[in-house]
Image (cartoon, rainbow, N blue to C red; front, side, top):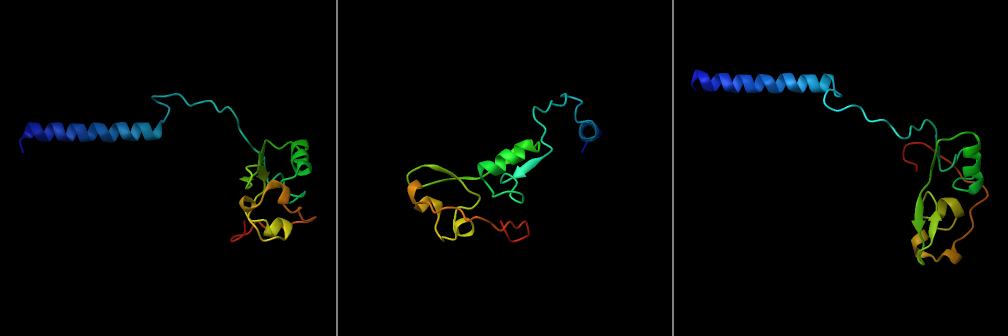
Length: 125
């Protein structure tokens, strides 16, 4: 390898390393930081499942009343294409009936139990 080729190789590699270091250390050097449109500090999981019957209007209204920034909920679709708010696809935990929401028409859905166990431990959802 000639000394000219070595010079170009080392200068290119050196320039790459210096540029990479500068951009990692100062990420806003080329582009300014974007302003966040929404910053959430408090999220009510399932509407605050530990405080009210999860995924109910009462739970969501309570969460909003205490100042939550965001409500988290899960939706599923019934056999007749109606949207149902439920954490689980299977209704065993919330109704006692071992059936999937997608296997029933909306009018066939069983009622929620009056009290649900809420676990936030590994292995439980």
